[in-house]
Length: 233
Image 1 (cartoon, rainbow, N blue to C red):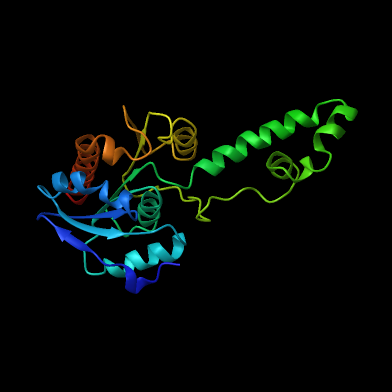
Image 2 (tube, rainbow, N blue to C red; image 1 turned 30 degrees about the horizontal axis):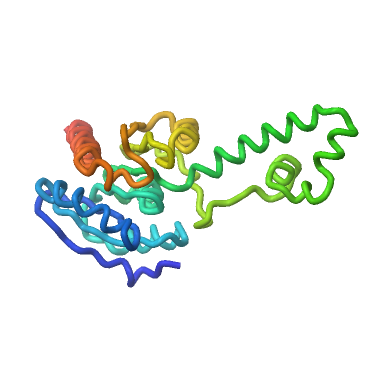
């Protein structure tokens, strides 16, 4: 679990506040060239969020940004999932999630359920062979016949609808970048938010194309600010 007292920010740059949630180790360092670009236009509040409990981490975030007027937020992986949850709770003005976790398992479960349903239409003897032990303990059997569905490694899946806060999800297009299965799952779950592809990027787009990632974040935050002004006016 990620206790509230451990949510510590490093500040860079000046301008409207932008919270950036980094992973640990080299994944955190991969953000460095992106932070440099963002800090030219924003006050970047950089925090490390190792994968853990989504509710506890988002609660820690809410406490840590108390006093800020609903800043923008961006994150990658589990940090992206936390950014989406922060948007769902309405504690940020916009959220940009780069290849967030929380969608892969929903897509995988749908595929497994479809496979199980196809199996159910097979002749009896063949079906018995397919579901005989040890196969009955397999994921397709459990997903299709009432067993517990698989869960993400961090134990969290995004379940909100993001109806009130501008949100952008961006995915790398190279193998391992989260597309197409995760991106398709996210689009099916949240068709009303902005979905982008990051050409030439893999699992860690910040390392592959830092300027592209920075532009995605800055464009999303600027659009959210224009929308906020228009609504207020």
